[in-house]
Image 1 (cartoon, rainbow, N blue to C red):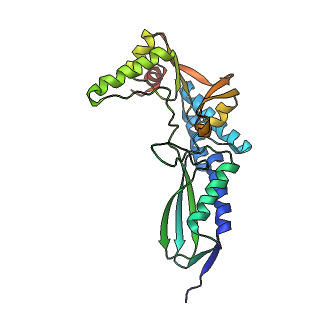
Image 2: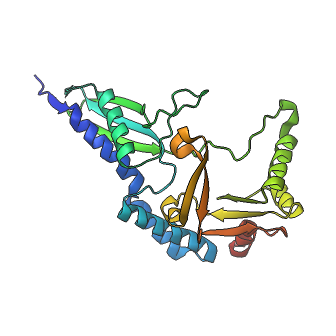
Image 3: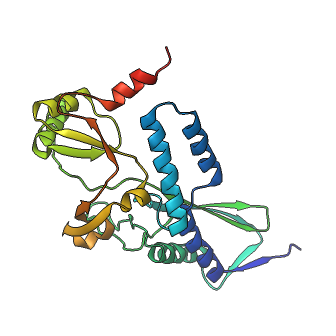
Length: 268
């Protein structure tokens, strides 16, 4: 007769709570090593600076125990449970969700889960977690946590296009948005249509290093909620920053830092 392993639900809750914070605060050593190797191998000053910012961000997050990125993810939990494992003192699902609740609250992590995809009401504690369960012949319980980032869903501007508008309608909407904004911030390159719009309307595009929230947070001097306060971290806020680490990627003359960087350092 197989010996049954008993695991208390309270212990599962504690472990999951800690996993939620560890996943968001601490970058694995293999990833850090890859970033260091890339920094040493990189010849582009701009790209080298990006790797330096990511490494500095990881250092700040680990030392201060704060999120690596502003997107602290939807809680995805992978469970491997042996056939002879018995959970006592509560249900496995409840213990996991309670751990997510406590971890995201204690770690001041952004809550992204909503009750309904239409009314968009936030659950307030990032539950329910998405739980994948596998039964094994092993006599143990293994829990793996993943903070699955999805990006902020707030829009700076929103429009409803008809199918007949097609690609041209999307381009026109982006161009009109640039015309109104005068300056935008992002983390990737812009299309030719957007670059032309920046030239036409004398606007600029600033690029920031993606996934470096801990570093960017050091530049924040003041934050004021201007709309949707009930959404918590998803609320629209007016931020006052100083020495915010962004570079002009596209200027009013049509210059494109992304394109110029590739051309300068590509191997021919």
